[in-house]
Length: 69
Image (cartoon, rainbow, N blue to C red; front, side):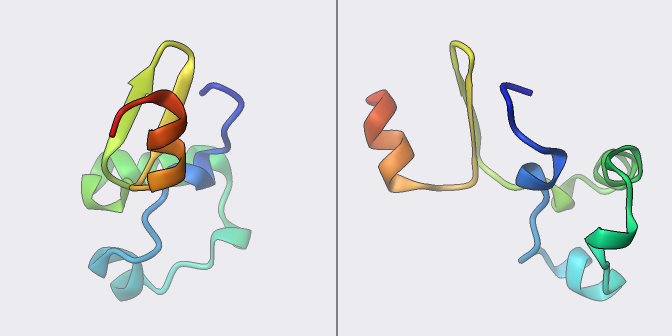
């Protein structure tokens, strides 16, 4: 995942995350992936892939760095 942690792709602001009252410290990467597969609203968006780089969520600075403004 281009040197990124599974937790980088988890949307902590999503309604489902709040409803589940998840404590990510208690969950393994595999468990987090399973949750995101079951409910894709738990995945940060947008996901932008440029070459080997992945941007999860809107980060203006990162978009500007890759020229995707």
